[in-house]
Image 1 (spheres, rainbow, N blue to C red):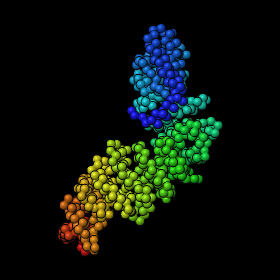
Image 2: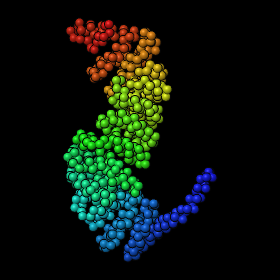
Image 3: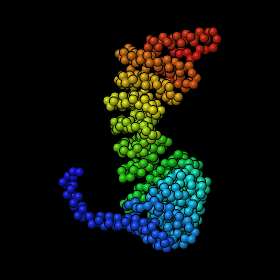
Image 4: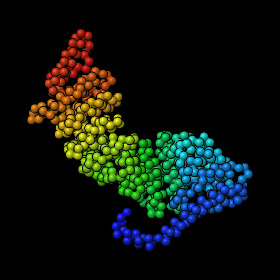
Length: 606
């Protein structure tokens, strides 16, 4: 590898200044790993029980000295875990050895291999025997197993009665250090098991957690409890998502929501954590914002949240302004997106061009989860657009939203998240085109019309349907119509008639209505382009499809918009003749039966 001379010089200076420190760290790390490996071998090869126990103590001490965050625990043999469990299962084992064994297993449970073998060997039953006597160590061990074995671990623990034990200890323990351990185990369990979430709700844990949160909040100035408060907020969120009625508890409590809001304000006590413990700082703010986002869906809670100051200002200015933590950006966007979806303070977001710019600038982040939230937020900001109210998309168009969002249309539609990103991006572009001539011009110059026509073939229903609606707005500019026709837009639109969804048919009919309504006249006469467009509609069979829809009660919700189509299409001589024939048949039927003919297009009489 070629290294530029300046970088090489800088490298030599760095080695000269910190090389000794790095050597010491590396020596300690590898020496520690070597010791651990040696003790494992000795333990597995030793036949004498007393000597084995002595080796275990040495192994435990080496693990104490080993930085588990810096390096994986070196396993030299798959026999180690079965042997540890087997020894722990013996009834003759003394309390001191029990403690050493459980401590060793707790320390190496941060390894995926350990958890996999622990689950395979059903270590739960053995550890459960010691849950009362070695509560903290056993809970840490089991929490690590949950992290790696996920749903299947929580299922076993749920059936074994693990969670009632945790709740009992949370209510009764005098050891405050156990709170954090229990809360972490519950938080990870809720991540993977809806049964655990329901159990916690039915046990009335919310009131207990609120009480605990308030204690941590009151004592936060003297001692850092950000981890515990963060875990509690995560539990609040999971319970309220599954049990909407749980939100009422927060609406009725006078302190909890204001205290949560205070913790995310820039002048709060946790600002001191930003430099000292940045991870705790960002995690707490993220978890609070995610929980508050869920509470917004409750009208009573949202009133409390917006009672004093507008938290949106914080979400924008503090969270979105920081590129240091993606989780905090995700949480802030979740809060903002929920506000826009529920139309809470949406006008304030729209009115502030700087806020819109902040969201659009985040499109440069390559994280799919964040991209999904960005386009979702932009969709909700633009969704109230009408021809008479173009304000919401004004700042977006000025900030070149179409150009910046265009690359997202190329994302492969491999899962729900990627499909949602593409689908919502299509909606944003379409909404910009509805009121704005400039946007319709931009989609032509950026070749968006061709790309959107291609998306009419997508496998995902939402992408196809939203593409039809978006194209309907684009072809309001007659100059975009030839591009749409040339790229087989009508042929691909015709395929949407096969969709089971009424929304798909609605999109098709809107598209045809706009094709018929815009660019019809040129110098006071029917334009050549318009006539060719309608000829194509007849040739492909779209006009016949529209007539057949008028004959079915299933599509009665589409009648008005189909009538609109024919109001414009009636200017074409062939269609005018077809409508006259239909009306004649309807009149004959009326005379013969005394009942009105089926859906006669009476407007054709003039």
